[in-house]
Image (cartoon, rainbow, N blue to C red; front, side):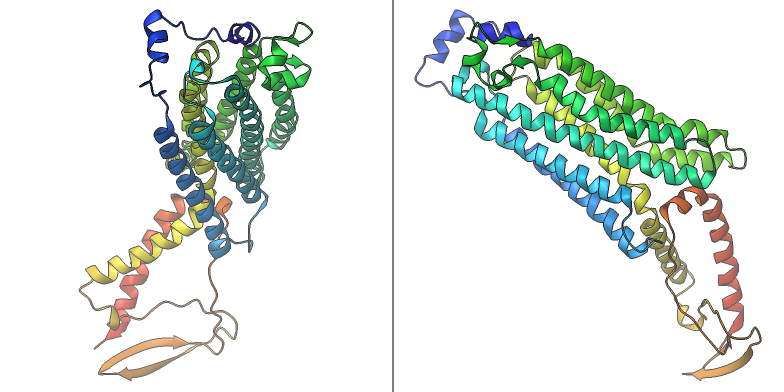
Length: 395
């Protein structure tokens, strides 16, 4: 029966020697598995997914200029949810269903269950893969709209292709048998009336297209960023560095495509482990890379506060003698000077009639476009303001 399965899937299966057969029938034989590795992989994946997405939404709510999540935030959340489902299903498949074990250690019922889980895996991964790619493209649209380039049509074209490709890829991987139920039933596959095709071809094609899309989406902004003349080389390198994390997803996608051969033409249930690891690296790095731009407002705020604290410490611990710079808005432009005595410290400061205190909010898109150049400017302005404040303070 497994030989018939090999004919329709392209999987040749392992060659079993007489010594291995003797071991299989030994009363002390314990089938090898990868349960511990699967649990460890799932914990690591869930940690990175939950941490990156949680920080993204925290940054958006706390520091975002638009008062809440945007479309690309929700798309990343959808992708992360499906990735977590995919990781948990894989862990269940390895621990309870038969993934990670040799085909000859499984009963027909267990093997059918593994084939059913393939359908769940194909579906959740396709949706997650599509959602994270679309979220990155939506971010590109916001960035390049601000740059006033002609990339909008390219971005919309890729989004349209991804939405169409998602169900098509599922059909290419799963609709290999007629009737469809034969995909997860060995008994139906050996029925002479059942028609099945080589599923390895569809998986190779789908994997190759996904790899090409990963590379295209990664390289898409780089060409246009380096063509912008009013950007310094330092800024171009900085913006390029933000998107470099996407290169990890590209490498993982290529690695997964290379491992398809071992998975599809070797032992189907044992050889899936390496492909699962490559896929986990692919979607985890893709989501982390997609979350990095949204974290920039939070990182900038933490950097400013930390730098201010360090300057106060290195100034000799006399921060109590220094005046603070407050944003003053509203009211007339004229101001008068008052002297306030506090514990022997005389502080001169300007007081306006109306003071408005507000929290500075910046969009991640603006920070991407302004980074490095503005950071240098802020550093210089901070030093000037620090020196001016110290000169106004007298003891």
